[in-house]
Image (cartoon, rainbow, N blue to C red; front, side, top):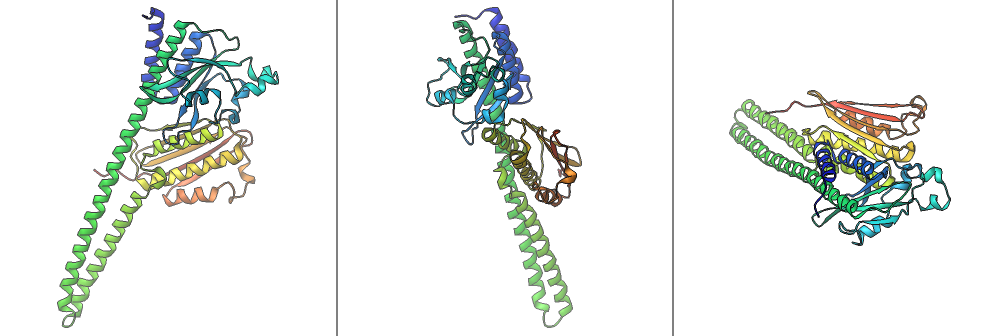
Length: 382
């Protein structure tokens, strides 16, 4: 059946939003805004499957009721719509309307102030071809049965969203392949550098041997040059190996690794994490590894102490410095009253110091906490 002019306008607007959004989360939030406004349903949220862990995480939301705004309610644990999705009962041709199991305890307690009258939602599966990606849920306080035309429109919108998600993931995969090629290049450099260094050492030693007995001064000079060549080769090998030792990132660029870390954190805690990373940021792997570890520790502190509802991670770099910030909206603390040995502060400071940088922590009670790490950015060699 052909779509009417209004549907085509909506689809074009959503396509434009998906193409112009800076990241998947922003694209999903714009889409939820349009879909809920179109259908008069007000509220929506999106679950996505993390391609690495296969766990569900809350990727975007709009106008959640107070009960679902509590992070503990939005962890990636199974619920009825997720179970149906995993069992293959929820398909693009089978958009279902179900009672929300996450809201059910509050509904049974008649806590209308916490649910805002919400009880049911339509679940729209997100696929790319036959690849399952996640679920988009939309709902409103006065539920009404969606018309066949609205369900068809939702199915088409879900198809567009699936393409956008997969396109973003393919871009990440391209960056990962580029990083693997860079690691292979560094490995070749290690081989070539060591081969050249060992050759120079051997030549100096061969030149020194004939003079050991009759001209010790000349032999000593050649052996000194051999020692200098050995030290230079050792330092170059150590530098290259440090560049290769970025195990925490598993070969990903830092921005992508931070996004994966945020998805896992959201799946486990329900606390949404928004990652903003400058595109095309090229940093030595040892800098990326230490900044990644600082982020891990900062998130661990959020989990243990902050009671936060949201976290924002930002990575940016200028010509001379790189900056990483992890900010939460939690309860905060009086930084003057907290011992320096608390909250993993020592570990984060040492990692920043290893990079020749510094770490600053700002926090006030009920005002959240900001962890800011900065380090020199080595000049890019042509």
